[in-house]
Length: 66
Image (cartoon, rainbow, N blue to C red; front, side, top):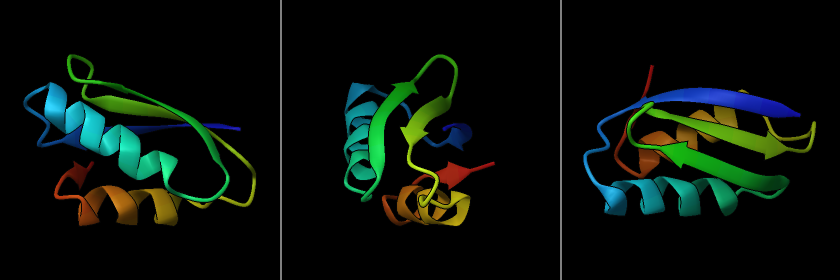
């Protein structure tokens, strides 16, 4: 299953790595492709991973999901 999150607050490659690592730490997330230019993350994950879990992780890392 793939989910796209629109993310605000990323300004550099460090931000991209932080969001990527944060999403990959969620059990059931297979891959996370984060784009600074598109301001989004495309997350490939198991059906057990909820949108709320992904949003919460990104917000906890200091970014905004819109």
